[in-house]
Length: 335
Image (cartoon, rainbow, N blue to C red; front, side):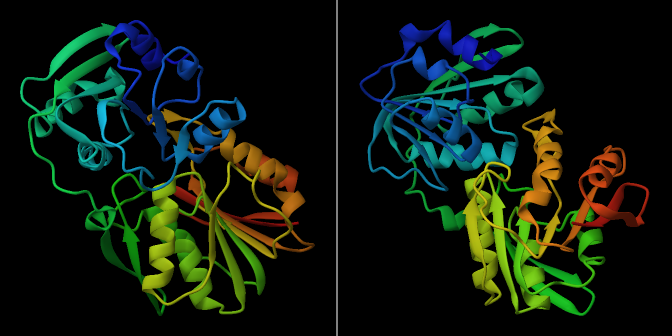
């Protein structure tokens, strides 16, 4: 059980099982120890693990699919402070004045500064417990909240790559919110030939890469996958905003992807929260040949310090480094 879950488990007497919403929980066994009404996550990997484990009343999506109003909400620290503002707005809209909001997180996740934001929900936040470098806070809602509309949090920005221009749509919590990150920019300038037929954008974020592929080759049948529900929500918005077509769906790695692709393009994730986690991309590279047609290209951009060269070279043929700068490399290979 993760440290944050252990802190919660130390305080089970605080929670009202008749009306408790848990948001952003990890994929450990906390839900077996705490009685709750509903659990919600933006993370498809967490959702898949918990539902396979038999946990009930666990939902996944960009928004909480329920009109229920809760007496208590237990919120786990998200990966960014801007995402926390969004979460506070979302859960506050499902709480009456007098309801209680709990916030739990690790010090390295920024729980100390995040706890200060609880005043947007109610006066006098209180630290309930601290252990294992984590803290549990509580506040009684006293601030009236406006109805929550996810689209109010969307932000557009313009992208140029060569002669092509796009409007990207992003939201707090999505990778590189509000701007084009340098790694994706380097990949967009080095996409090479875009094949027709099925093309995969793995770890699509807000859909910049997949949308550019669809724009450059209308014959490409672009499929965009991610585990983050907000990313997929924005990817659909990006396609629609630019009048482009593509299929957008969740996949835990390549587990929910079927068939083979004529090309794969990716700026893959290597973080899980504040932790560096290479396992998702390592598994992706090793299993990728099973999802590629013969001679299908891979184009992958990554930080230069990540040791992907040997993995790609072992999994695919004609491996090479297309370009690199002081921070990033673009790799190519073929099945």
